[in-house]
Length: 419
Ligand code: PLP
Image 1 (cartoon, rainbow, N blue to C red):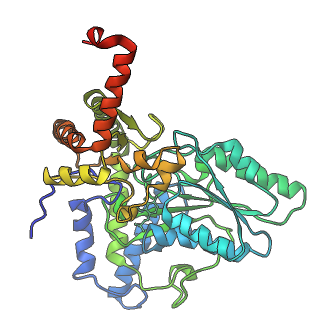
Image 2 (image 1 turned 90 degrees about the vertical axis):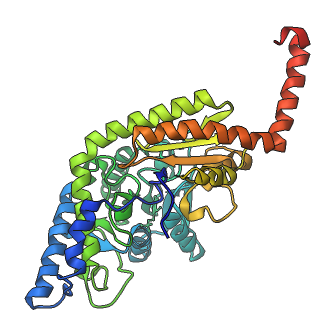
Image 3 (image 1 turned 180 degrees about the horizontal axis):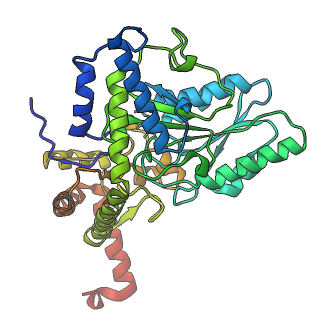
């Protein structure tokens, strides 16, 4: 069956595979099927392709090749970073810090470690969805071994002050050294949403560990990586044949890794141009939605946000209903993060920025990408106001609000002056 989605506004959930990535992968799915651990030439061809890919990805973020560990995706990279550092360093400290708006791939490992006796600080964010660096600094104790703060949020797109937190971690390390405290402190960032979309240099950001996932940058699903700075003390979570320098066992996903590297190569070439193009489309979409539909608010910081992210709350409607109406018009978007959209719980990110459960339920997320055109934006701007109008006509809360507003206006101005 052919899928009928023509206009795709859910690039934060996943991106379509770029045909150039598919072309790079195909030889490793067909003729070059060798196992990279074997010694004959077919296997060595696979091994060479993996090492070349590792180098491409390392260069992209200013890392060394041996600091890239391939994983099955972002979730595994996050679990590896968080549990791996926690297990390896628990004898020296058991305090770990994160934020309230992390992806579940970070929050769940933190909850799990908390149940096993780790002390966790969940930092709040302000109404724009930003972590306050002073609060990060205040939260650090001599027991703190790990800070994990995401680079960019998957729901509201806000970009966190990672380089500033990196500086705090550096100062803490020097200060501990002066006081002869042996406990290490490591800094991890989940860069799954920003990787390939924002410039990233691990030294400039001051991070020790960084997670990425290929399917968020027009690469294949089921492959990702953890950047692991040399010298970080970490336990491996997947034991077996000793692949990935003994850090992550399992026969390598050669075609996936080659596709990931091709996706990185393309992202590098197009980064600046795409950043500018998407920012312009995003800003047009935000401006015109706010002009065309009343009682809409933007969620997340107006400027410190990913170039392709628009997240809004629309008074008087249910996000799910709007999503289904948009689907009928061949538009795909989301009401929160794709991973949690099956649950009816309000988004933890929207609650953390101070939205009410109703405002959270009335949210829609449009995420633009490489294949989004100005024509798509115009189509959405034509269809969305019509759908919101229809839904509001059916919404008892919206009708009640209008009646209340009219009574209020009558009281203030009197019926005659109102027209
Ligand atoms: N972290 C963030 C911020 C994400 O947006 C996602 C996926 O949506 C993940 C982690 C999980 O990545 P993966 O789907 O590769 O497991």
